[in-house]
Amino acid sequence: MSTKTGAKTYLDILKSELSPALGCTEPVAVAYAAARAQQALGIRPDTVEVQASRNILKNAMGVGIPGTDMVGLEIAAALGALAGDADAVLEVLHMVTPQDVEAAKAMRERGGVRVGKASTEKTLYIAATCRAGDAEACAVIEDRHTNVVRITRGDEVLYEKADASGGEMDAQNTALDVESIFRFVTEAPMEELSFLRQAAEMNRTIAHEGLEGRYGLGVGRNVFESMQEGSLSDYAVALTCAASDMRMSGGTLPVMTLCGSGNQGITATLPVIAAAQKLGKSEEDLLRALALSCLITVHVKRHIGRLSPLCGCGMGAAVGSCCGLTYLMGGGLHEIEGAIRNVIADVSGVICDGAKAGCSLKIATAVSSACRCSMLALHGSAAGNLDGIVCEDVERTIDNLGGLGAEGMAGTDQVILDMMVCKS
View (cartoon, one colour):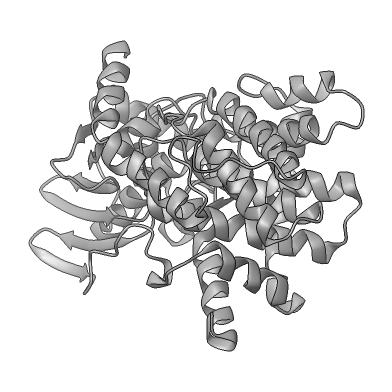
């Protein structure tokens, strides 16, 4: 990595992949598309129609919508169309009132909201169309949750992105590798990493709310109340799962997302925050560990995809947080590479069957694995060539994980979605 240009690029990647969101990012992205369509329409719509890729449908079917007692895309689309603040992007629902919720419910009950599967091979695709009388406007999002590529009003094209492809996980289109990430994290001037304080504060706040309130399955709260005194692993699990409990059940606090996912954002940050607190580490140590965790997560997610049949928390953010934990406990590049191989040997293959309250259970598994795999690496134990898809070469191991998700599990998303639709 060239020093000055490389450091700037890595900072750009971090800043582009970290963004605040209110609510689960798949239904929120639908609400954002609907709000952009309504903005183009210019008047209050009578109906809203959404066509979305199967991954969007899968990830939004069972998750709570902020400020409501409802789940799913229909209420998200209606709220976006009737009360969304398009300029707030993934915090589009921050101004929603109880009256807005009732209006959205009424729109849904009278058949004014339609959601269907789009005919596309893209994993992330949303087309939202708002109609009022004979007037209509449409906004299309592709590849990234906020990547609006086209807005139309009637036959008029109001906006069209020159390079609509965007490409999955295209932040700066820069090749990443573990060694260069580690070098950047250890050499970057502290002031350049200071923006990560916002991520730490935002996600710590939602975690504490999850511990104090009663949300979802209460995974974090229950682990916290029953954890062994002094247990770093239990505390990391409790803090992280409490944040997921809160946001998956429709809580109204924002979260700092990573790679377009709130659960990945909290899984990449909160175990590291918990460890820094338990170990009495300095703010500098914390921020460097957060940068390491987030960049490693981005690196792994580029291989498995922004939306994937594999659980992004288990397959992406757990790998990142394991590296942050290893760094905080004194590990160097060798131990970090071993920790990555350990996590992939441990939890590779955990599926994503949509965003829901049960995500906290998978996050508990992922964070527990991250803590255990870090400890093993620090004691010189690391998976290698004899361990399935794991290789001595950490980059080849990450590439194998990507192949498992993209090629080996190509039909998994459709099978999962079919099962979910049959249930509903």
